[in-house]
Image (cartoon, rainbow, N blue to C red; front, side, top):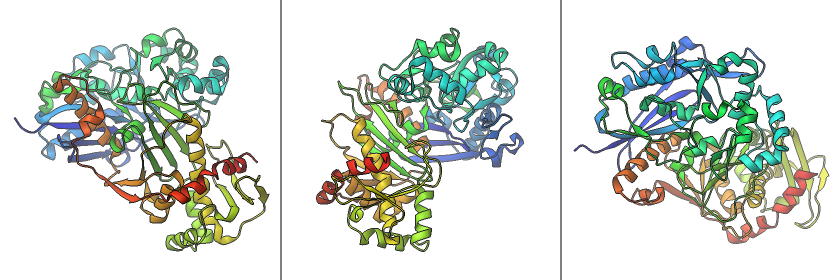
Length: 540
């Protein structure tokens, strides 16, 4: 028998990717369809449509369906042997939702292999043809209403892992029910982007996956079950039926591909379909295991921490997110998102280091850890953490026990270290609050994004967090790779005959992480004492 392959599909904002790995987790095919470039007839900009309402952002569902047709043809043209694919999983942009019509079940169950998906699904399978996506921020009214019903932002965060956010699916459903009651009534089921995709393979509407369900404000994040109060508040009594069964975990076999995939493209009839997850959980699956942290240093800054199962649950806050883990029952992912990432660092570089990263690094290295008591907090864009803060703020502290004093400006040479320390200490202060007091430090810090290539930033991150810093060989397709690994995991479980962990499956894979910085214990101790000072600066 030919070597099995595992397919990971990633439906992101701007493109659809298909990635195939073998049993050793080595990528053997990698293809993509760009929405603007390859499907210009939909008129999207960066994969999305803005308006007609203020702050409304959607994507055409038909575009996503046609992208599946197109990428399958590209896979065939590239010589992919579909019969070798033993399992399918993937990732979807988080929070986006798809609204199936009352005809969807019949259409999915009777797909004709002589016709494309688009020609059969496009006309009748959807009650709403433009899906709200994560960039939408038009549901502020619904957010405030939901928080009031549950008892405030912190109460909602305690229950679901997050306060109410405009992009989250629950408030999007609530808005549609209010403004489009007829379309909502004609909706038989509601999928996330991540559960919409496996539905096409299965021939019936797939359940929502537990980690991606954490981004809906509809699920109890500790139990992994839908919360009846939230369902009622967002979609009325009918939402319990429309949302489908309880969320499922990764590694679950949902079924096998329908005859459409077998007869039209040559898939093996025993190819299994497994739950797809969100893009952030899929990235965690690709890059880490419980006990690891992932720090993405891109345009925005995102910190993801895999938290192992514990008798004492992680704390929840209104400025962070807690998600169920996609493969480990009882484990969680803590997530922090910052708007001011590389743009803020580049602004400091341009103003104080002549626009040169080498000079920026020199200035960082010239100052000691703690920056001689100089502090700078930089928010050129309205920030998420802390919320809605804009501007630059400067402070001077005498030691790590004294309250810092606001000052008008800083010496030009201290800004580069100031921005790095403040950005990373903000994360460290919040991670310490999320974890229990006796929780160990993460075992390693996986760096991604453009700034992960900067050796000075790598070393400062390792020192400040007190853990070794690593970079992955290739993180450009992390979500699709995570999806392919989830497919492999389900196939591996179904063939092993015993319950084993995702980490046990990956134990035999070649390590594709490179150690780039070891922490200096003495410097870490300095930063241990500066967490409190940073928090004082932020609160002044």
